[in-house]
Image (cartoon, rainbow, N blue to C red; front, side, top):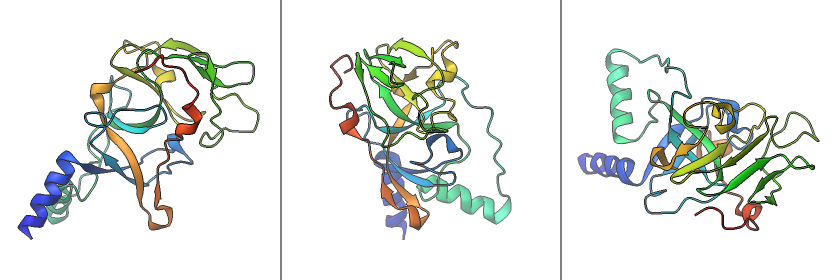
Length: 215
């Protein structure tokens, strides 16, 4: 039993961690209350790629202070223990989950005449994963024209008209960019509920024709 706990703690610390989805910003790829497993090998050992769905720490007060009802007594102790060993998600910290659209050096623009985002002047077709309020809308209701600085990412939610992502923070000191150092890892699978078990697709085919502006 103790060996299993040690192994679980080491796995949580170095390999994978569970997280839960608190908002609809990534729908329908991820739904509210989904539990996801996040690989901690990215970005330290596995290189980040466009299309990766990543969990990252709040870069600059993007989120309000968390309002988490912590259980008391025995229930609280059990919850703390399960979180500590990695068997339950940590609900008390400010984490966000979005899709990587721009890597360092990328020139990311929205939108062209067809309502598409372009990366390094190459339009991308996001229809396989983006949720729009109605058919025919552009890929973003907010225009932007950015060059991703060194050591940062440009991230967007799949539920494009209901996601406070990089676009919502362009006027802030961060410029809406997420430091790669804030990335906890890459979401790889939906683990709960059982009916939604699935690998989380990075849709690398969408970005296959993009030039080498990023690293």
